[in-house]
Length: 134
Ligand SMILES: [Zn+2]
Image (cartoon, helix red, strand yellow):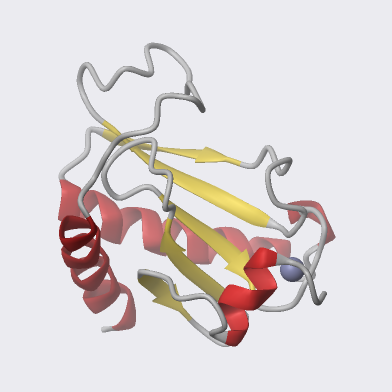
């Protein structure tokens, strides 16, 4: 889709901090992170919803791979997966590392955005990408 921001990221028209890539999926850090290491795993082709994606199981296997790599890098207690799908109308799994006292309490507060310097984002992304592509 021409005016879809995620399709533009896939095409390389918009830069991203890449954390995962295979034939079908692309992962990158969320520029409005809910915690350090928060990434989005999207399909390279445009689908509206996560459940529209062919190979739903493969999609989640990729999400798991990215989550485990992320956990290693940012040393989170756990990882949450969010698939609300409202902000951008292109299938995405939001991968959110969780920490003690991270401001999200029992759920995820989608407004609790963290300020993380670009340089730190870049370093986190490079470390995760090294694991997921290795
Ligand atoms: Zn799209």
